[in-house]
Image 1: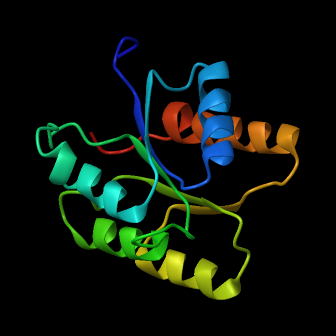
Image 2: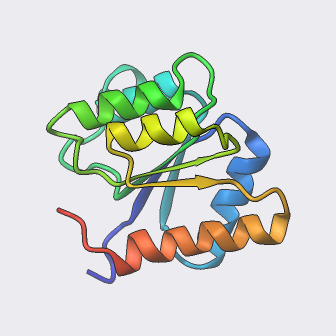
Image 3: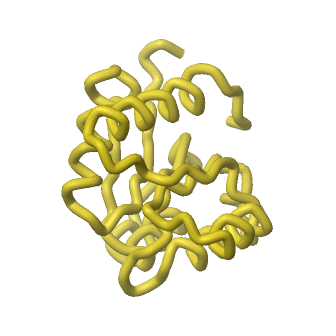
Length: 146
């Protein structure tokens, strides 16, 4: 299990936030592979092995999805809706990591089955620490279905 490749799908349209997230995960040795997608349509293509990801092995889903709410093409709420509605992807843990503190986004995310909803800290050090805690919890502490 120690050499098992951990894969995180990071759905984030803000390149600075994506870079900070990937840096924090790598700095804490939490992910050998982070796949960054820049919009909701690409996230769904990746998760459901279509479009440019048609050759991806569907039996190897990501261990964790870090999902922004406010994304182009298809927003994070719709990505979450489709992900949790499909039996093949329903058990993948999803952490919404967004700048949106709107109650309707929080309520809708939990109604759809999100595992955790985190409002991104604005300060760099807090952001890095938060991402590290998320990674430690979901990748090393929590047991999820294989």
